[in-house]
Image (cartoon, rainbow, N blue to C red; front, top):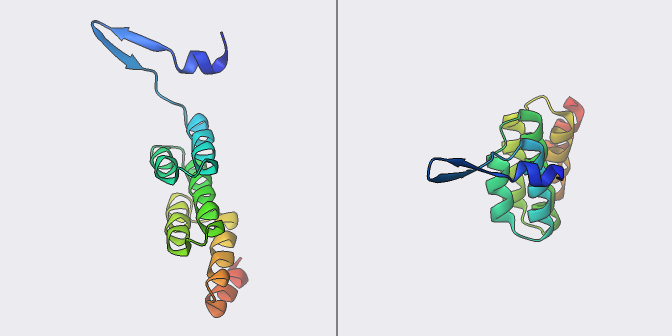
Length: 117
């Protein structure tokens, strides 16, 4: 049985059927898949369910980059802010925020962020 089939197995509890919990690394893959398909609402829902802080940070970085690529800058900024709430010392997330700030034309703020790295 494949690893995916094992993680999707359904467990019986009396008459109720419960799905096995989805591990965080699988949720991160779902975030990437949903974002690539343009389903950003589903991607954000999966990102919100990730408990591991570094993986959650990466998931929100993915959402930020996708939104920025679609020129949805306020949504991109919200996503990178959530990423930094998950991991405030993430240099890669801070770099993403600086680049996003520069894309929005806020050069002084972007420069200050870059210098703090």
